[in-house]
Image (cartoon, helix red, strand yellow):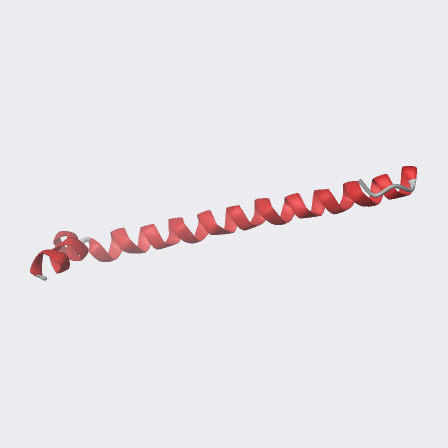
Length: 58
């Protein structure tokens, strides 16, 4: 159990290291969500464009 606490403590720098990891993870999740939402928006625009031009849903 002591080894486990030493791993998270990281010689006194644990707070800074783990908070940096959390910020990095948060930003990564935001970027992934942004890409997914942008893809959906583009698909909707293409679907509407095809419907408007050809009267067909592709």
